[in-house]
Length: 306
Image 1 (tube, one colour):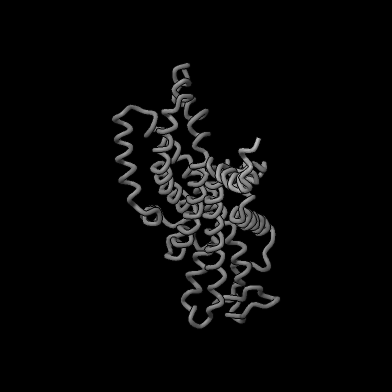
Image 2 (cartoon, helix red, strand yellow):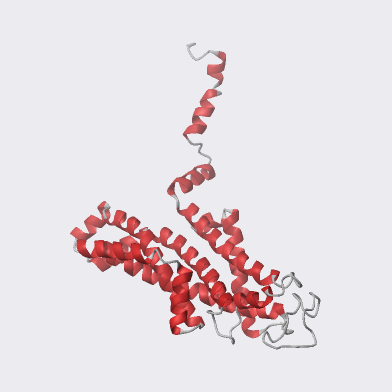
């Protein structure tokens, strides 16, 4: 799977960007060019230079240091929300697929109702009730997208549950939990992986959007969204300053989305079979028919000569 993902340019791009993000997040734990929260009124709105790689903002903070510190928040939100969304999605999918008929139908209706609420709106409602903090953002985004994962995966899980090997496992005495762990989740893993990458991309966008609106992490936490909110007021005067956090958010979201596309392509049996045939040097049916059209015997008309 990993080799097939890396065989695609989109997969390579996604892995490189996300790997660099994790490395920068680890580096920011021990080093940043300057204190990301230190203000300097004598060095406001400085342009990028050797002293300040990305310049400074309206209160003299070093933008590069703040962005570097913000990678920790981005990684934490993406990973935490992804884990919560996966657990919630698997649990809701299991309840909606392996229980009695009336429970399955009730769960289907509930998921259809919950999925109608946008993830960002749900996160805003929860953060408005429980207060803006990084933990609330992670939990709210994870719960909101977990419902979406369950809604998308429900049909695939029910299809797998009707497979012969699952029916045989049930007949041999394997319980619902055993069927879920041994057969349903492993066979639906590509679908869950794609949805997980989308959940993480949504989490990064949601955290940035909530911080931009003032509902995100607290003032003591570096966030790309809050930095973008501070800089966009002066974008007409200092347009270069807002470029950095906006580009960082767009790059990470694009990498996560492309990773999901690469995983989907790598797990598609039709695409992987074709790739394997090409790698092995075996032409497909179209190739054989094309080769037959260039058969020298047919061209010269000697196929009937004894």
